[in-house]
Image (tube, rainbow, N blue to C red):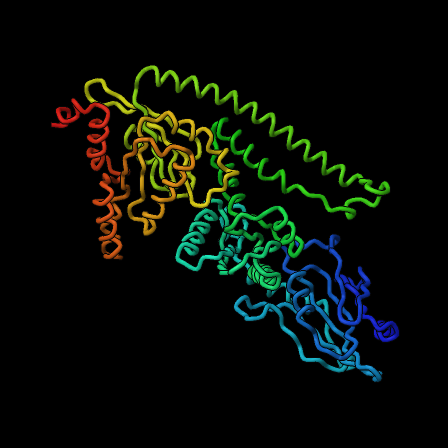
Length: 520
């Protein structure tokens, strides 16, 4: 009653945030139409479904709960929101309550009760919130159903393109998430004529996306497009969910897959260069001790210390990388001096490069049906009859829209490619997008100034073609025609019996005068 009286006297909305034991934690004073809720740093959401605070506030003109009220309820995961509906000139007033819906299939994330007279309102608040929280927990997947580190993600793509390539890119992002051990709960593709420089999508739409993610119990938002530091900050101001983009996801996979010292150094260097421009302070909120005009408090000083440490670490890693590169260079010079032909296997990620290397050289390089299963460069010798041999190098796979900031993580691979006498371009023949993947690899090789290198196109996974023929005859015929058009050799890297045509072609290319005699 007292809050209603004060609100009428001041002509402002007044509200309180109350915790689970009934204590008022925050008192809010707004204007005639709305309240501003501060950052609730003392009540972090974490992995909880509800924050542990309920909002009670006034509406001066008897208007029901607004979209802003419901948005705050959903975004902040409040226990509930109650509005005192005051009517000018009347002493009595109504009360309206809203709370989160426990049904993830509901079209609205919130349930709104009809207004009732304040004196008639009855609710056992503690029991109700406890029951609601239990119902919301049941909508989360069981721990046994969540893979990896327990991260659950909503995938988001905002693109100007409306063609199939946008869906293909989203499918690839889903595979990247699977590789990183992230459970994908849902995916959203929005087509826009102009991208929003602050949120990538519109502010209203990003709020809807965040509410949907919270409703599903997501802990992570993954964007298919690369986000600028400013965009990450803006989106993070709306939600407490972690926000990453495609580049950061790939870097995370790289960090998991790097085994050798060389690979670990390259990945850490790429991560630090990615993180550096994204290190930000929080202005005066980090420190109340300001030193006059242009003065900086201890909070901002800490930020500068962090930046300097990152720059120092980058400098040390670059020096270490130069030393490792010098060692690689010496080993390559020995191979070149010995006159042994060098073949580098290139191709789209998960095309089967490591499997082919294992089959050709009877090696045991790690393989798995994941994107970027192997990051470190592997080199083996392949022996032919008559004491002939070549050196085969397995390189990291390429992928579409690879940001230039990540090219540093390919340094070892690129050095191997420049010394190669032949690039063996391996293609996953059974993939519906194999032609697009061929073009993606060709574009990356052109960007790396390797377009003049001799190439041999090899279509892999021929063992999957019978199943493809039964499933999609048109795609099967297209793949068969493409093999003839490109003049490609077809193999199954898992089956050594299919490798003979490839071996014959390699021997013909390097020792043309003896190739035919060897395989008679």
